[in-house]
Image (tube, rainbow, N blue to C red):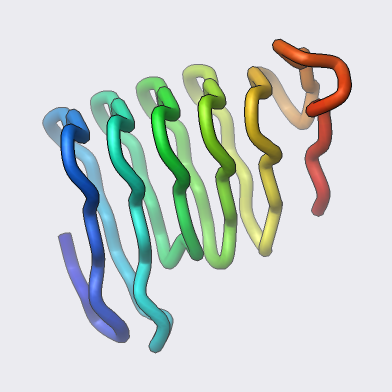
Length: 110
């Protein structure tokens, strides 16, 4: 974890596995909620916020100002950057493809 700009705030009951890189170059805090699972070799580079109870699978890369809602799954190898917003209760996989757990919640805004 490298807080080059603002702080990195991590909530309770998160599982952060080995080889995870968390960097905050922004002046605002990088906030990670509670109950998240962040798998091996994930990169979080100046992400704005990650909500609660998300699963971020191996080798996911989230870039500057990305926001993740609650109860979502980001599948292995996914890459999002430049302010992408992931709504709550969605499953993301591949390159920009979306499959929703709840059709009303399916939104990815770039």
